[in-house]
Length: 341
Image 1 (tube, rainbow, N blue to C red):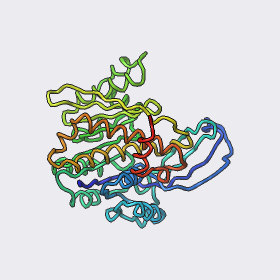
Image 2: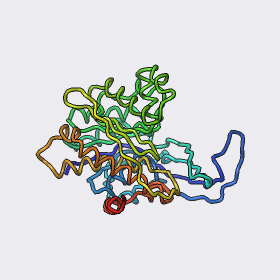
Image 3: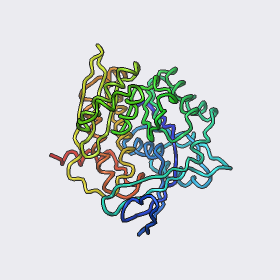
Image 4: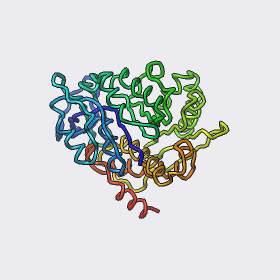
């Protein structure tokens, strides 16, 4: 089976249960406080591991985050490439979870996530080869991230990018021309599309979120020649994937959300989707070694399965508190789908 390098953030999540997301100038009381392991990179690594693939996490943590690394390792993530920084604190996420509607709001302290060096990047990518995968987010410093995607592309690795959070200048700062697979939520898809073509926002008015997402990802496939798949997660509307065909045509696939989800906490649902979507692709390639990754990424059944596993796992992650602790196992996702009509 191909290996996956997840090059990304590790955070300590400070979670506050509040009656509603705090408003500007408002002070409210928290009914409960908990500390969870987190960081989009760490969450996606654990999701990949729980989905049964060989995942290696690279990045940087402070001494205060070693316990998170230990926990990741207990879930099956290999952390030999995760550097401990003696001087800086780990990244922190201050998370509000509304008891009224289970929505969340997050404030990030980058910490060691923005102290990753180019040497860290070079060391991380050195032991991976053609056919391996690399997954990145946008919670680490972009010079290190760009170094990794450049070297991964040179090696013939499959590059997956989840640009979350997505700033208004991401297209200018990140080397998207090396990316094979983009995974976005609706707002990130619109932001990236508008960065390429400002008229996207005008065209998106008075359309449904699904139609807007389809327009955005088709535009991204037009502008990014190497991009093979663009996926948009749509919360309760599931997820949509647009795939570039061999003759340049674009095929669209949609997977509805998992029915019957009892919402408790949406934190980490998107990261769970990313991990499971990628893991499903990796497992499909392992099951049929006669096909190349490029052929795999054009197969309708493979894409539909990856969407189905991603949306189901993401939905199940909403049924428990926390990000990393809520990620289900592959076997449990498969069983849930088997009992879903």
